[in-house]
Image (cartoon, rainbow, N blue to C red; front, side, top):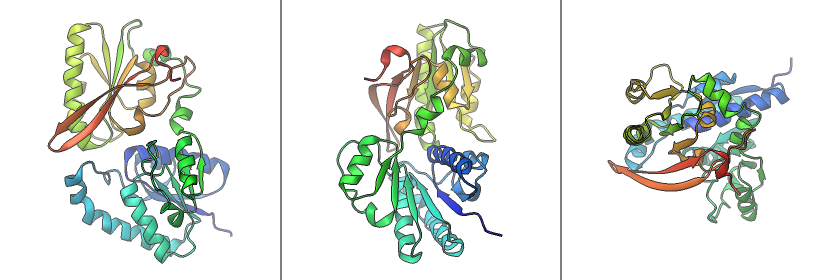
Length: 315
């Protein structure tokens, strides 16, 4: 009996886990393939057999990254050994550049002939030109969500294809924002503000309390305002999420799709959450209006305020 071709995914952050899950579902729909790899809960929900749980592999800031180096080096070695033994049809790397670039380099050295695809290449959202020529030696193809990224990569000799941003696919065809508000039992006509403090524990612990303080201030000025709080998909809510849930004007919500569509304004603090366009039947889109810098314990992170009502449509 002919074995199904194996596709081995590697990601180390919640956003990459979500993007990998979408890709895995689409690939499984197109062909009879075996899906394996390193990922988190979204990938497992997409029927990916995860050899490694990489939910907490990501880091922000130099101190946290340094602490994780020994552990991640061990995981990289284990992944390389599995790839040598199983020889998957394609190794699919998703974002997580500091780890995946080194993994690709090692695989090229010890797993000759292994095909490698990079989905969401590192820093693909940056428009500033960069020398990406080294990727041409490490991967067979790059699939990038941004058109300018594809052109920059090709200019550096990297075989790259623009595939569009999956966030757009997630929002296209969804119900109108009013339906989402009804689903969350939110009163019609009241302003709804979404709060998204990020996906990593360190940024949530740093930015989250500031967002809760901002919500308290806004609620004192807008008594009828309702707030939606983005929680992570995990079995046990964090201390911060439990704190948010105790506030009567805040509704915790694990589905970021619903949160964004139900909100008039989304206060987001994380990479492409606010950098990519969001579309829906009522013309919702996002726009970066302002940036603030939050610095605490040596950690800095940019925050974007995204207006999600039609008047903020990107041009």
